[in-house]
Image (cartoon, rainbow, N blue to C red):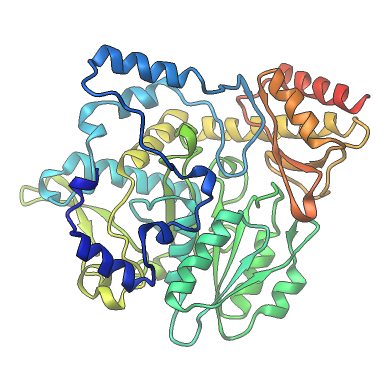
Amino acid sequence: MGSYVPSTLAQRREMLEAVGCCSMEELFGHLPQQVLLDRPLHLARGLSELEVRRAMEAIASRNTVFSTVFRGAGAYRHYIPAIVKQVVSKEEFVTSYTPYQAEISQGVLQSIFEYQTMICELTGMDVSNASVYDGSTAAAEAVAMCQDRKRVKTLLSAAAHPDLIQTVKTYCEGSGMPVEIIPAKDGKTDLDALHSLLDDSVCCVLIQQPNYWGQLEDADQVGALAHESGAKYIMSCNPISLGMLQTPAESGADIAVGDGQPLGLSLSFGGPYLGFMACTNALIRKIPGRIVGETTDVDGKRAYVLTLQAREQHIRREKASSNICSNQALCALTASVYLAAMGANGLENAAAQSFAKAHYFAKEMAKIPGCKRRFSGEFFHEFVAECPDVPKAMAALEAQSILGGLPLNGDLSGCVLWCATEQNSKEEIDRAIAVIKEVCGA
């Protein structure tokens, strides 16, 4: 691919110098050495289509595909109705991208409009954009929306996903916005600590609901504290949980964000996913990215347009709070088809099953000596439990084609973050419990 990069060696050296690097290796020096390729690719030349297919199938056969999954931590295995892939695999959708010529992109614009409508219904907010890259990016873009001349500091819950925290920090470092982490207490955002951190320099407070450890936050109280101090309130939400939990709008949020992966997108080795963003009408002119509106054409027929496009990320880039001008059109369409196929009752059922099965899992696990829950608060479909021998338990589960929960470290070393969704049957849960019991000698 190097020969297809349209920059010269001299231009690349100039770009490296501008960011303070001497080489491409230094630019990517933060990546672990074990994931870097230190040899040429072993690719044969001139293979036929059949030979390429055989070679790829041989490589794919070496992957471990678990029949049962009890791991979440930000990416979740939910049931995807067959119609979802049937619709989005149509070639007119597969090749869709940002509609630069809106007047001849009515189909794409309508699909985005429907997506925006559903996200607003799901979150209770007034307006949604056409999506951004992922949930962490959405959170960082939401923080940028809240900054003004006097209020520049962000308060970010320590109970949020580590990737979300790191992404927000990276964005804020680039724009000179200070970030303070609100400590966690008993697996949730410490409200006393939040109260002590709030002052007239804080532009926003961001929490995740449910949080990284699966706990349900005191969302109403967080919103009340933020608004009392004059700060904006951002909630990062699991969209499936909104099938049974109160909406961000009902909790007083000014901005709702989250990762749309649970809405019909396969795990797919980590992507592509999409980030959803929605806000109140008061912030409509600050939300980044594209917004599709509905209108009528000269003949009075329904038509769709890109609206609010005289925005600084297009015309005053050096002063922009965001430079995102794209969207995840195919992933957003997938989410739309999933939500349409599931309907309100289907989404509520998926949430209720995930909730019930996770609670059954936690209840059965608590019967195993040494496997008690670490946090006592209410949870949705993830929970943290202590385990006497985590590596041995994970290996024993893998031997039964079961992907166990995520082993945690640091202060939670010796604990596992478990997840259950509607995909997990009672029989699968009982089988996993039996394996863990055997490992623990129970």
